[in-house]
Image (cartoon, rainbow, N blue to C red; front, side, top):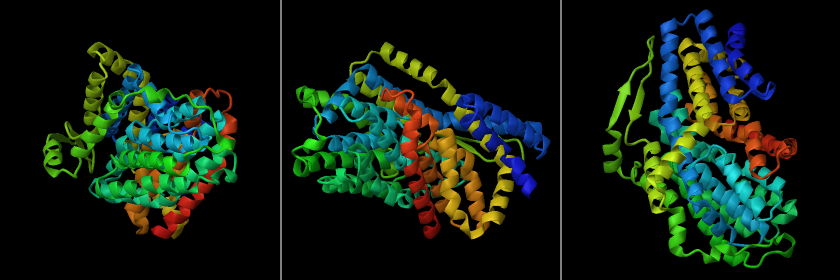
Length: 509
């Protein structure tokens, strides 16, 4: 059992070593990991070559649809708002709310950051808010650290729920997706509640910064957390961040007018009131792609069964793997969130008077810019398929069962956190470790939906100290070369979050 465990872990160990120590580019490391996994699968676990090839094909197809489709559609929509200058108007509108740096941090880093995580994810929820906060006059280093910390908990439902949807897909929990989604929100509810308070402490330079901010911060926290949990438990993983952040931003703006109408002189920053020159119509036009995404995703969700069922019925179900116990892939051609986001992006672009040539150019540049990401996702998905079909994942799970027993829930978020640290992606972490965690839970007689939720929650926490995430944040805030300082300040929050998540996972299982 020990030998099988060690050998089965070699691809994961290699991936960690390649990314963390050799500083190898992600797509190269993942492709080499796939090659290594195929060699082990064929040579040690005796999986037939044709079975290995079909497992890779299944991984690629699963990676392209729906995962890459959702990511590229979301990033295309965001890039189009940048191209049409709508994002500049959005930044001005948010930046005009207050001249208190703590209020702006909550509104931009927490409210808008969670919104961007729900809409696009993939580093946008750190890069955009951190750059906006720095541009507004908030300390750039503190801005990056604060955004990394608060971006940990909404990762579960980032990119319109891709991490959790992928987790359920690769673990066979599609029928329990509402349970997994609700569990993910519940498991990290305490951390979600505390995150805005930590943001104020980080930006304000200490716990003293909470003075005069407790009512607004508590409102920002609760107004996001409650809608997130309700939507996650009853609708699914696509909309919790989006609905929660919209409600939270509205509540923050109202609370700021009541509790923080006048900025504290110790935290006051000079503000440009350019946003006051933006009319209501211009504001709606600027936000139109995101409004349309919200509307389309809402009305095609299971809250509206006739529309949802009609679109979900347009699908193709195929079995790709040529071996024992093959799984199936379902291609929802109309009901996929990626399709809705892409449609919303195009309609939003037309509203913002972007020409078809401009939109085609933005789409082309988006696909080209993220070509390595596509390769990374497809490679990681293929690694997971090979490990699953060959029995490597099962051998790892059997060892963990023997080694940890009933204490496994304590380390479940840590396993997810390790994946988040290495890959910088909640989706990739769910692909790598999701099947392992669920198989371990089933072997121990634990609730697989709860342990699956612990994996995706841990992935978000691990992203807090991910080299990729830190590089994105420092680059956006003009702090290239300050990565080690950011890591040093963020790691203490990582340790706290992962310990709390482990305890909650253990108690709640």
